[in-house]
Each structure stands twice: as structure tokens, then as C-alpha cells.
Length: 285
Image (cartoon, rainbow, N blue to C red; front, side, top):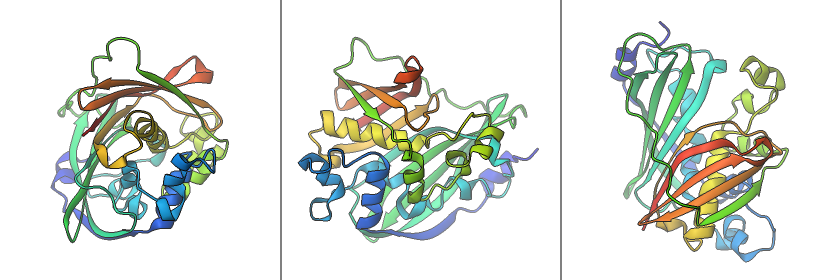
């Protein structure tokens, strides 16, 4: 079996130094659609270096996300075909507000391996700390199709009860035709998001948008709409990737305000509101 769960879990963590600067932050923000309208003062907080603050989801690409998903797929005990890999979910815990420029140590390991029958799920955990202590912890849940069925632990269910009542806010965000090409410059060069031939091998008619791009677009909507534009209020952010987005589509983002949290559901307008992000929770102060 290409995935040896015991070997993967026992593997030594991989540690590396990462760094980022203002340009990296600005590029990420542009990659998730910030800067429209370009002169809007609320957008300049994401694009103009003299006013810059960091959306917490930048943590998923800081230092090119290293050690990240692609690195984790080459860990001992893991040997998979990249065309069978899908990003299933993401959980980000923010320990301190992210600085505009930084240097830190990232430690990555496979924290769990689950057997879903027709697929295996790898939980790749990255813990990042600088000289002042922990900054963030990132868990990526990676589905590997065709690699389940060995009788292992199925793991916890990520499904939540849907929010009650109508949403407090509904916003729509247009995804540019070149959004994936721009977003991938922040470090995720998986050809699934750019190469039509590779996309066909993976079962898609054309390249799809990075799930983490939709993830960033959604968090920005939450911060802008319900958290007064204050990125430092975000404490954690979790989602399940329920479907794909194609560049050029429109995202419909529904938001429910709760006690210390915001629930979100995201769909693709042009495909009859097909689900894109589900079980999405932003916890905040």
C-alpha cells in the first residue's frame, strides 16, 4: 500500500526556516481578490505598504507554505499520485497577530492518517514560531483517492449542524479568469490549477481554483463585513472543502453571526449555488 500509516506517523518532523515580507503579503492579498476598488481606503489596508495589515489566512502561504502539503506528500510512509490528491479541509489557529515582515521556524509532520474506505485522509500539521513564541498552527486535511480500505481509524466527522435561520449577511465575490494564475505565485504550483491537460487527468474539464484561495476570499469577507475590518480579532478558522471553483465564477458567501464566532457557507452562483465551502467557522474576540 502506498500509504503506510504507522511509518508516516512515526516519521521525524521536518523543520525549516521561513521568512516573508511586505511584498509577499501584498501579493497574497491580490491573489485573493483584494484591491477592488483600487482606491477604496478599506482595500488599501490590504494593498498599500504604509497601511498594510495581514489577513490571518496568509499563514497558509507564508514562506511559500513550507514545509507544506507537497512536502508532506513525500514524507516517509507516503507515496501517492498527485493527480489523486484533493484538499479536504483546513484548520488554522492564530496564536498572535501575524507581522507584516517576519522570520520563523516551521515544523511539519503528519499528525493523523484516517481510512475513509475509498480514500485515505492525511492530516498535515505545521507549527510556526518566531523568537517571541508560537505564531500559528495549520492543519491541512488531504484526501488521497483510492488509498483507503486497510481497516484503519475512520477519524472524526467534520460535519456540523447547519446554521439556524437566514444569514445575517450575503455577499458575492467575482473570481477573475486569471485568479488561480495570480494566487499560485504565493507558492502553490500544483499544475491542477494551471495546466488543462493535468486537470483532465485529475477528472476536471479545466483547471480549478485553489481551495485555499476561496478560503482566503471568505475570511476577508468575514473580516470586512462582520469584524470591522480588524484582522487581529481572528482566533481560528476552519472549513471543509465541499466542491470546486472554476476561475471566472462568482462566489456567494452567506454569513451567520454567533457568540464569538461567525459561520459561513460558500457556493458557486453560476452552478445553481453548488456548495464550495461548508462547515466553516471563524472564531474571534
